[in-house]
Image 1 (tube, one colour):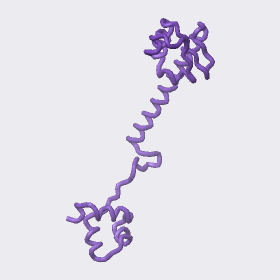
Image 2 (cartoon, one colour):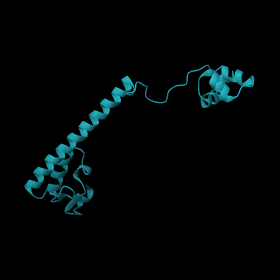
Image 3 (cartoon, one colour):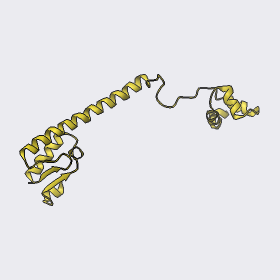
Image 4 (tube, one colour):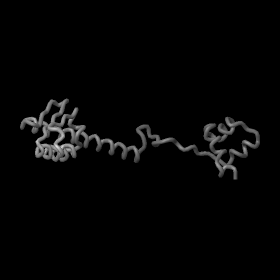
Length: 142
């Protein structure tokens, strides 16, 4: 906007108008400021030119629809995240990596008795990686 106030250009050209602003309010404020500075606004993809009254009207309507679409998408995403938080996934499984529940304190004892990582995992009903991780934990050694 500083360059616009300095008079560095007389026309703003954007690829798509929804990349220029996020709301109708921002659009109206920018267009009013451009108008007061004698700057035209052109959107390449929508083939709209705000130097004409019809272009201004269509531009405002299309921008309002784009803002509505963004709001609806946002509401759906927020609702989906909330649903997932409350109920877990569609399959009934909880969100995220499941916690391996087993007696971590038994891992060092079984290891000292000569059992392999695989055998310890089988006995405790968990994965080899979980057993190895449990053996590295300071609380497992004490």
